[in-house]
Image (cartoon, rainbow, N blue to C red; front, side, top):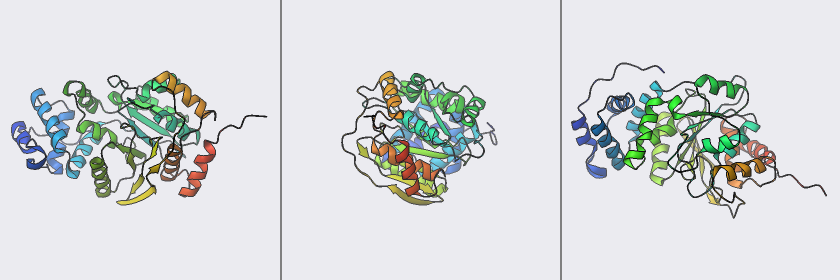
Length: 334
């Protein structure tokens, strides 16, 4: 992690006055001021009272594209960098910062299917999430231990395994901001930035999910302005996997252009785990990987999107055929 020039001290009271006037009266920061502010937040240089004021102000106001660019720049300067495995498709990056509350978390299934097809997968996120069922907990049930360093994550990727890197190892400053949710009671800009982390410096494919429609527009504008690559979609309770019950629209953002790979639509009544806890979900995932449970069609479509965008397939039709073959159910012997 290499920082750029030292961040100059800011007048926190003046800044809060500018961004804290509510959704209609607040002023957006330019990219440079946003970088300076978020860099100080990540470095622990903002007093506790003022830090809380900034986080709540941003939560109410919402981040502009220029602010997101400044925040992302500050976070990128302070996170661990990883090297993508040689001779493999682009690594698929799956941020997992929400967990399951109402429906099973099937993000580990998506990750395991991707690795089965030869796509490197880096998952990063929280180990615990205030009572929600995290991807890390499900992976532990599947005998996938979290990596404790960037080197361990790179070794897992090189061996064709999922690498799960906790936020505290990937981006310690951001992890401290994320942990403040327990005290503030709400999510904030740190959770938005966690979805934008690019550990491979442009070599990976980020799968970015949103919960609210206005954030989908904001993320679309961010990637259109930056020209960076990503798959963008409405997530399942904030996790970046397709809702098994309702196919989300999935967009490929590349070079400032937006391509809709999958249209939104209904998906019927899929067979899902009978409970959301980690043990039950993990067992169902084992059965799905063995072809004993049908993989919901929205996840098959998302799998195809990942294959295509990561370079595992030459076109989307080929990617969809590969995904369909990968999840073909086992036919019982007569």
